[in-house]
Length: 238
Image (cartoon, rainbow, N blue to C red; front, top):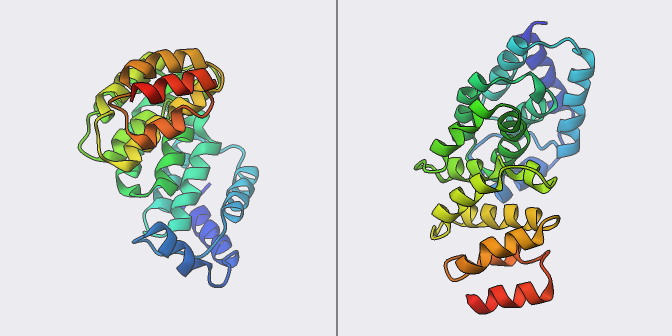
């Protein structure tokens, strides 16, 4: 498989799925500095699904090469296709790929790309490979709030399923509770909310003594799955 040729094919397919008027609307909505073709998310996913079907024997080296070639031009749909590709082939990734993923996260600069990379690509890798998970400790104190958000969201999917490393998440979230950055506050609440759907008591016990420090954004998300009594107690403690 020639990664450059496949990337060119993906680009052609993405352009062919552009919807008139969507590019300007999406660019404005995301406050994006990237070029936009105007392809709906299902269209991007369909293109990537087709690539994966045609190249079932894609190996690790080809995956990383294709991802980097796709990502390089500052075009939103190409970068979204990169995220979808890495998500579809995440089982091929190894701990050393955290360097590449960190680079993509730093360049993404929008939740529309960061969240999928962190939760659906980094997440399975750190769950599978403890060596990769150690990198999150550095991310959690990084000066870039998108990287701090990524450290939190990388733990989301496993916690949502009822497993995962809540102790690690709790350490990160506790250190970030006083932050003013909306995207960090929202991520803490998001992970707590999804964790609480299966383990409400664990989230309640963690959040109650911290309710006075947590932002309204965090609390509004976190308390949604809790019982009425738990919700009242947390809001009263605030």
